[in-house]
Image 1 (cartoon, helix red, strand yellow):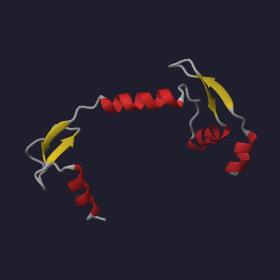
Image 2: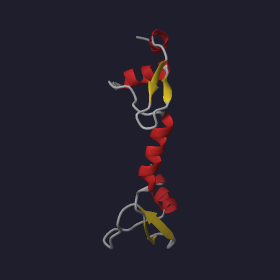
Image 3: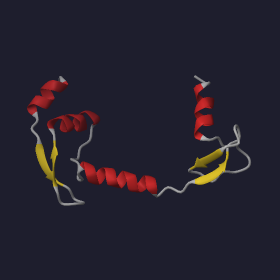
Image 4: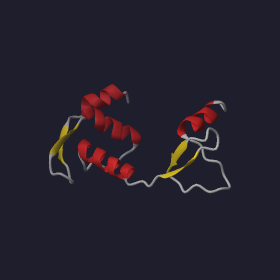
Length: 101
């Protein structure tokens, strides 16, 4: 079925966030997206609470500082570096991966 037809058949729905208790709108467009992706359940949290949860997970990561094997600059990584493999800073890592294309 055409996506525009599906969206036309759906109606915006007001839901209550399980985290903050505020109401939020589950739009017809979002419902069509959920349907297209095969998601069976409606969202339980509002966008603000979902974003806050993502940010908290990202902030909770532990970062390790080491020396870039290519330029000698500082490299911050999310894994414990070992001496058996080189570690690159973000720029050198992108430069190396960009040349492989």
